[in-house]
Image 1 (cartoon, one colour):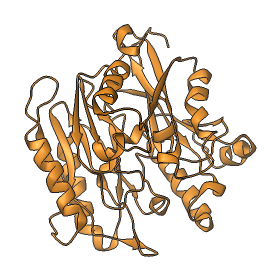
Image 2 (image 1 turned 90 degrees about the vertical axis):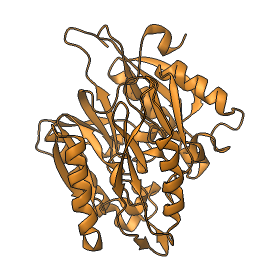
Image 3 (image 1 turned 45 degrees about the vertical axis):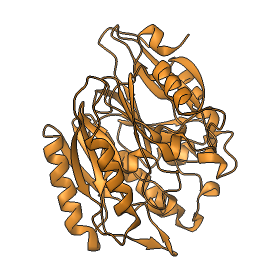
Image 4 (image 1 turned 120 degrees about the vertical axis):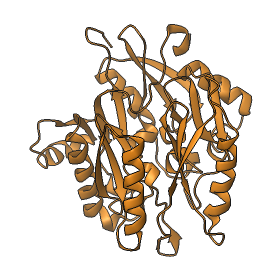
Length: 347
């Protein structure tokens, strides 16, 4: 039996949350362990920013629980000891589902560290199940290797993803596009998949959609764009724009596309950093937006204005987008939401 058969669906990120999960960094798994203290400071600031809007649960390795707990005086930030290899809870955490009766469940996807790029990942592959068990949430195990950052939904039947990631042979080589779509429909209760082509240039996740596009509402998609023909992202974003402009959602609505200019290119040790305003996080009544400063000051302000118009009832909270970006991700990659259930409901 699949979640859709029980009436469960994946809610949109803008629907009400009970809490947000964040996983604490693990020095041994970092690309640049010498930056451990700065990265931890970045995660602590993420947690405090989100806690202005909703409770935060920080997943920590058991031997660090007391140390991390001492960093926070806010009662809305708590610590949950669960062994893990890395800090990207968006990708290895559970995908929560809700139904119309006030019940909640969760999907335990398979996780292989973005196509077996980083070893070990066995602890990370167990995190979703551990979280669901701790909160007594019904668990559905999926055969798909899938990271949460590779999908966005509108909560009304439409899913957004990229071919570069979901069709990559380093995830599910035995499955073609049709079979992957069928699995997504059965587990997430969506009726339509919109396939963009590629993610941002240099993105080591193989094109996660949460760096390039997301829903702002049913029938409305935000997308990061580039107009510089000398930039690889120019061709990438133009192709994705062309797809969206011809698409409709599950309800038959023509997609309204809202472009956001990308920040200026920035490199570290000759590698391009994956700077994205689309890696923002929607929490209760708020938007946590990474900004990049310096030569990005102009586009930082533009992104904030565009998101203010897209989410007029939410407060925009900007955070330092450079704090953890050298490790490959940002605030959306670092968070995972648990949706609230109706009053009187149960998990």
